[in-house]
Figure 1 (cartoon, rainbow over the protein chains, first blue to last red):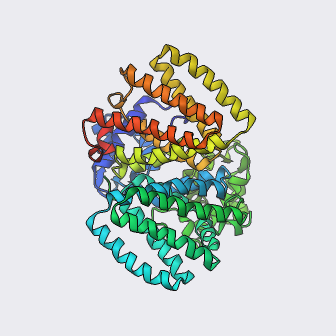
Figure 2: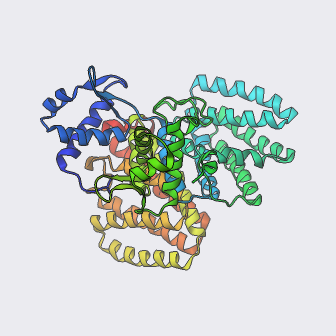
Figure 3: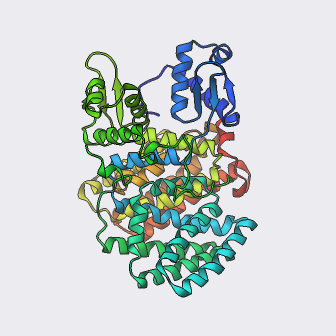
Length: 249
Length: 266
């Protein structure tokens, strides 16, 4: 954290070592007791505690006091990281427009990568999904569409095998109003049909392993949503989490 | 390649390490939300209240308030100062701090260099296209001044100047694209790249690469200044491809065999 106040180099060296040790230890396993770590690292107790506080903030460490206590390895959860990022974006008064603009290239890249990286198991899941989805598309019912849209997002995120894009899209989903806005866009049956059939092209291309068509179709589908959202006047600032707005100040 | 976990966009399950916003009914959850809202409504650096004042206004125990404060502190929205004149102060998260936490997460997920590159390319491209559409006179002024400095330095072709101007380019692009989401995501990926050691620096002691990349980037900057969205998109992709190719060359591996990030961090 470059902009934080200067820390003693003993602490920052220790942070690195603790981080490495935690990453090398299975989550939930003990790294060592405080006394053991003071001895191993040959540092003072306050130095160890300062370093431990920083690594805990990175969610790589849990410190338990008392008998049987000590330092335990832990892994950051995507939800917790996305939460911190979403709070940051809210503090920057991020608008829905900014979010949508960022979602677009991520979706396109995920579709492209899914066409390249899907495993045989994932391919089977995508094919099964296509069969079900074709039946639903025939009927064109809105609820079925919204369900299939969520499942599609999950399948693509998994098949793209990119934890970076996955983290980013999860962060954007932290804004609970985004899915709701997305669903409001699909109020008319014409929009549902128009979007659904373009998305279907992307899905077929992913199954066929045609990365370019998958990307182009995904871009076209994402553009549709962007244009509708903008036409509907979605230029408001986002509120993070539904409950916050109702909280008395 | 790391295995992406099942998609959690609909957030059905959260374990106890997750943020407490779903524990809507608990006292700590309510105090957390209230404290967060108050912090966001207070100017950065200003006092929200002393601990005693907040205890009285929320009507909760000290232990509850401190639990909530620990969570809001992790979100970097408050600073707690002990002693006389102490209390809870409003603060705003820094992009560096948030990017750092995200970068650590990616490291723990064994994200590979390939994943980073694949993510950075479309984001950079999108930022460039947005920047090309931003015709704000002040931003244009920033770009023109940068272009001039960049042209002078590139004539000499110094490595340090190249690195400095690369950083500057990233900063101006972040401002010009007017998108805090893309800015945060790219900052995260740059933070991850900061974990790489000098032996992974594809430009070190490679003046030919520096020269080639530099001139490609100048085309990129010129396209942004011209407001040519299509050319900007192409130029951004071309810059990203150069970097990918050189990384592949240096590691003498195929793109699908990039080392997991954690092995580079040692």
